[in-house]
Amino acid sequence: MTDSARAGLRPVSGIGALPGELMMWVLIVSELLVFGAGLTAFLGVRLTDPAGFAEAQSHLHRTGAGINTIILVTSGWLAALAVRAAEKEERARTRLLLAVASLLGGAFLWIKGIEYADELAKGITFESHAFFNFYFLLTGFHAAHVVAGVVILALVARRAHPRSVETGAAFWHMVDLVWVILFPVIYLLR
Amino acid sequence: MNPTHAWLLLVILSVASTILASPASSGMVGTWLALPVLVIAWVKARLILRYYLGLAAAPGWSRGFSLVLAIYMLLMMGLAAMGNVAP
Image (cartoon, rainbow over the protein chains, first blue to last red):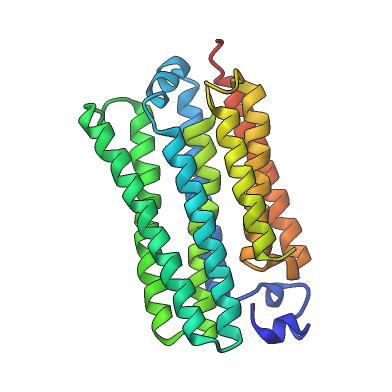
């Protein structure tokens, strides 16, 4: 959100009321629809084999995914603080916040990598069960977004311009938003 | 509320939902687990939209997103309840 918006210069309704870039909101809604459809299909297919899905889910690292949730929301918080720092033209602070947010994104991917490696070591693959089709597809697609987010945060940190930092942070929050919906459906519902 | 308050709530809610769903700490399954876990997910999504993405400054959009997400969570809850495995 820019200073002018905070000062009340932005309209309070209509398209103009949306903070940041309109195209970023189009992307956020598109991604929510894609992941939402994937998760709906996941729960729909689960109806055909509830016991098999429950057994498959028991092989996942629920605690690791819980830790990853905390890592991602913490990274999102730092990105939100970076937007405010960029608006105040505190470039060094903006860069530091974005760097730590990126590092936390890297930590998320590292934990996810450990999780995948452990599952592969157990002989679990994409084709082991319908549950794992969805699991690898949805979490893998999300991980690809995390990779993109880490790169975007690093790119916007270079100039630390308020508008680009806000846009980069919005992408990162979208990654966060998708995860807080994906995590309970895939890992927690039993 | 500011992003720091939202972050604290997000951490607390994330820990709460993970503990609720843990077989070791809670015997909850099916609908009784889906209800609190998906309500928590909805609250977390709202916190991110309002305080990370700044929708708190656009109340109409915030309400719209909240409503659509609530309907989606109800759909998820229904599917989760139908796919319940009896303990």
